[in-house]
Structure formats: C-alpha cells, structure tokens
Picture 1 (cartoon, rainbow, N blue to C red):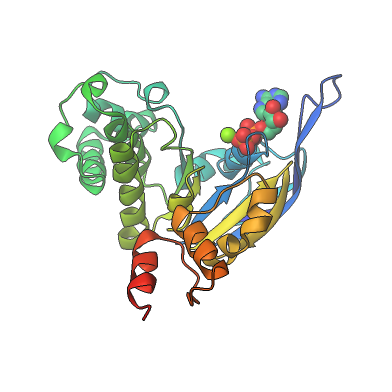
Picture 2: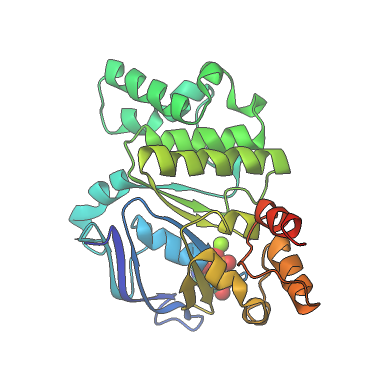
Length: 278
Ligand SMILES: Nc1ncnc2c1ncn2[C@@H]1O[C@H](COP(=O)(O)OP(=O)(O)O)[C@@H](O)[C@H]1O
Ligand SMILES: [Mg+2]
C-alpha cells in the first residue's frame, strides 16, 4: 500500500460561487513510505493546495486522498492522519507559538495530553534530530531563519510524525539557512526513514530527491527521477521552470561537442565529468 495515494483528486475553491476556481484537476499519484519526493511547478500551479490535502487541512471536492489507506475526507481519520503527516510552511515566523524553544516543540504533544515526562523525552529526541539541542532554552526570536525552520521540523517530530510535508521551507532563508534545513531533512529521510515531500523552487534541492513531480495548472504533468526530469531542459523551460545550473552547463557543453554522456544534476558530478575529459 502506498503511504499517500491520490485518486482522481480535484479541488475547487469557492465551489458554487461566482469566483469558483479549480485549483487541482484529477491528480493521481502514489508516494511510498521512506521516499523523498519534490514537487515543482510555477506559482499558482496548485502545489500548496495539493500539499494541504496530504494532512487533511483541505479535503478533495472530487476524488480521494488516502494516507495509509485512511480517507482524508472522513472526519474520524483527521487526528490519525495529522499525527502521521506533519507540515512545515514557508514563513518561519508564522509557525512558532511559544516564547521558549522547548515549549514550542512540546506544544503539539502537550495538546494531545501527553504526560510531562513523556513530553520532555520527545522534545529532547526531536531537538537532537534537528541538531538544535543546545538551543532548548532559547527564545525563538533570537534564532536564524534556518534554525527556526528546524524548530518547526522538531515540532512535527515530537508528534512522532512519519512524514514531513514542507511547503517552500527554504524560500525565505539565506544560503546557509537553506543548506541547514535541506541537510536536516535529508538526514531525517536517510537515517530515520521519514517520508519527505518538499515543495521548492530550488532545483539543486530537487536534484537531491528520489522522485520529482511537476505540476502545471492543477495537473500533474511530469514525474520521474531528477536526472530524467532535468534531462529534458526544453520541456522544463516550456513549463516555466529551470534546471540545476550544473545540468544546464553540462547540456550546453555537450551541444558544443564535449563528450559528456552522463546525466548531470549537481556540481560535483559536473566537475568529475569535466576532469575525466582527455
Ligand atoms: N483559499 C483560496 N481561495 C481561492 N483560490 C485559492 C485559494 N488558495 C489558492 N487559490 C488559487 O488556487 C490556485 C493554486 O494555488 P496554490 O495551491 O497556492 O498554488 P502554488 O502553491 O503552486 O503557488 C491559484 O490560482 C490560487 O490563486
Ligand atoms: Mg504555494
């Protein structure tokens, strides 16, 4: 069974009103446990709307979204689903509630009535997992954007989440913060088997994932491994999207006759390919 499955999922905002708008149109997809999936698409293509279906913040207006077989449209599944799938949003300042880091991370567990010593245990493990233990007693507003996003991730981990859905978590961060967040997410995926769904505009982040989904006007239009998706630079450009700089450079060098044959999606691979040229 897929961890998340969308079957012919559509979402219409303001249904029946004059300003009704179909933001998702017949989405079919499966995301498997332990996968690291990236969702790409230009602004307004429906990425955030889709992401909000994964933890039942939104319900389909047609079709289905299932999380481990549980229908997100069935109200009795809401808390089970939200316990399995945690969301992290773009703006780090909008998702921190408490005045002290440990209270913020412990907010979810406290809300579901966990015993104080249990909360402490989960908070410690969650802060450790995002490398933020030493900031336990800090005031969140003193932290950098990347640190705040890691606290938001810890908040989901403290709820024993199995899946992180990150909606442009690095969009507001500087390069250092971006690197911190993305390597944290990668580590959680690789070491703890957390399923990751990352929405991003940074193609270098997409290149790190197992699979890339591309959206356009509410539809899923492409799906594949990063190297497959990025290989077709013209198709990506038509969709209004870029490819990693290394991919584009390799492509142009190939066109000029350099014998680079491998699919290149990152800087290291490009350097290696160039160094091997005789
Ligand atoms: N709450 C809403 N009410 C009406 N329309 C919305 C709402 N949220 C998003 N939309 C519209 O749905 C479309 C998809 O939006 P969104 O899922 O946010 O796209 P993305 O995250 O890819 O930028 C956009 O045209 C947007 O204007
Ligand atoms: Mg969005």
